[in-house]
Image 1 (cartoon, rainbow, N blue to C red):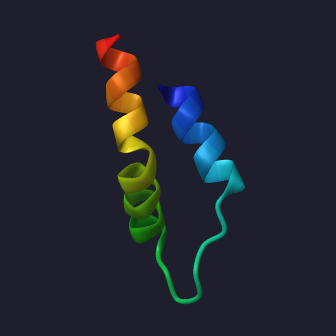
Image 2 (image 1 turned 90 degrees about the vertical axis):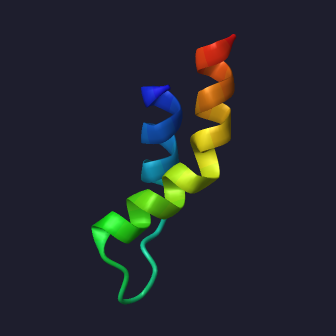
Amino acid sequence: NIFILTQSIQRDRRLMNEDVESQIGRIVGRVGPAMLLTSVS
């Protein structure tokens, strides 16, 4: 799970005037379902 999150953070570009917390929230919102499925299986 940490690999999915880390890879997504490394590939993402922060939007203009976006703080780090918002960026992380946006990324977790995008990869959260994949992290959930890998945890369950």
